Length: 135
Image 1 (cartoon, rainbow, N blue to C red):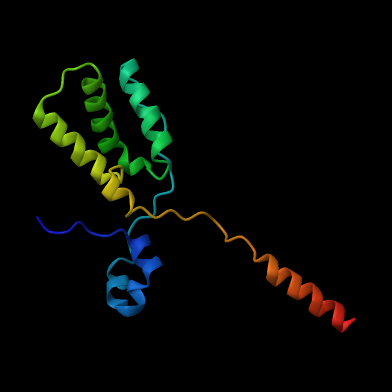
Image 2 (image 1 turned 180 degrees about the vertical axis):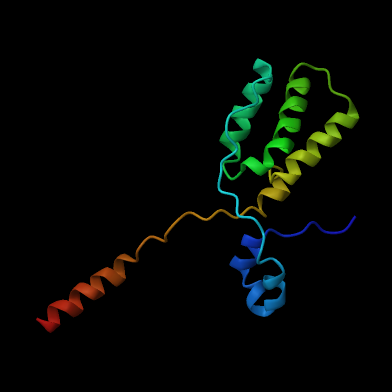
């Protein structure tokens, strides 16, 4: 199996599109998803709902487009907690977790924008000193 495709945001942050602008143009029309994962499906059992809440708490980067994988993962997690899981289901669970960036290896590949950078306090002091000299 080949490598998984890197998320566009990660490529932007690493400067990959500056090195290869055609790569960025090829992804120019990707949909932008901002809607969060949301509430668990209404047909979930209490154990599945608990798994959904835990998933949301551990992976705040998940969006509504991740909901099908999240549903599968939560159903399998509930089965695991009830002791009813097969080896095949465990394998699928690991694939789901990996795709959502929730394994130790995959979490290192997750990149979250955290809004504006904090201002540099030293730059603020320098600006104040410069304005005091002008007066």
